Amino acid sequence: MMYRMWIFLLSLVACTSPSEQAMTLSTQKDTATTLATIAPLVQDTLAPTFDLNYIMGKFDPTQHPDFVLIAPEYADREGMYLHKATYAAFEQMYSDARKEGIKLVIRSATRNFEAQKRIWENKWTGVTKIESDENAAETTPNPKERALKILRYSSMPSTSRHHWGTDIDLNSFSNSYFEQGEGKKLYDWLLANAAKYGFCQPYTAKGEARPHGYEEERWHWSYLPIAKPLTKLAANSLTDNMVQGFKGAETATEIGVVKKYILGINQDCLPQ
Image (cartoon, rainbow, N blue to C red; front, top):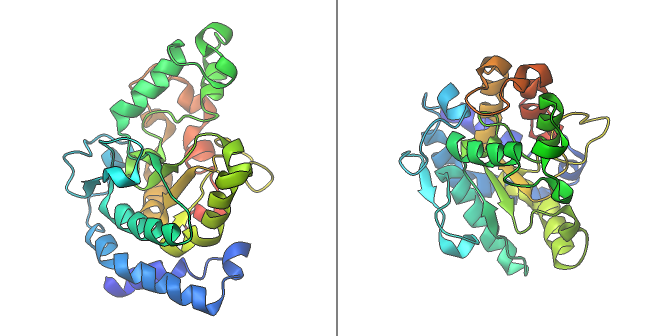
């Protein structure tokens, strides 16, 4: 089992994206060393605790043995949780970034089904406005069209990667922040270094390689050693008709949320 885990972890180093192909031998060694530090934590989590309830966020991260509370120094608020392997990798990435004048701030982390349901239903009912201060409940009475508007940046409950404890939002929820000044410096550092710690940006700009799914989110980063097997489990076991229990859930099947949103991510973040 440990041998297979090492093969999986080291495969991150040999990924085929252009940025990773350009890594120097020294950087590859640094990546292997970083992953070696967190390998025991990943190994510990490969028990059969990943099931559909986990995928769909139907658990309490505050009570889950594999989740830890994020220290205040890493976040903009207290009370957030991550999977312990994700957290260990982030701590190392945070420390190394600080040495280069970069401060990573977690703005959002694990959200279970109930937390995501509140976000979704607030947007569905117009309590929370979507982009451009739009009240989707008033402007978009058609359920599918309303769901698609919300899905630009928010997941349906049961389909969010934030359920998994693998995904973090960093520093700002605005793509424009990362286009200049300190934000661009931070984003450039992540593009150059995040893969060394196992992190990948799942929601890159949409285009021919990624025609479906959420809009670009430069703030959103996913810890692949845990997220890849979870993505594979979702692809093999989760169906659109299982996505239910909230307002607007009836649109999930019509839209095809599993294929277009859970799997509609940056190809570098997908399981092979």
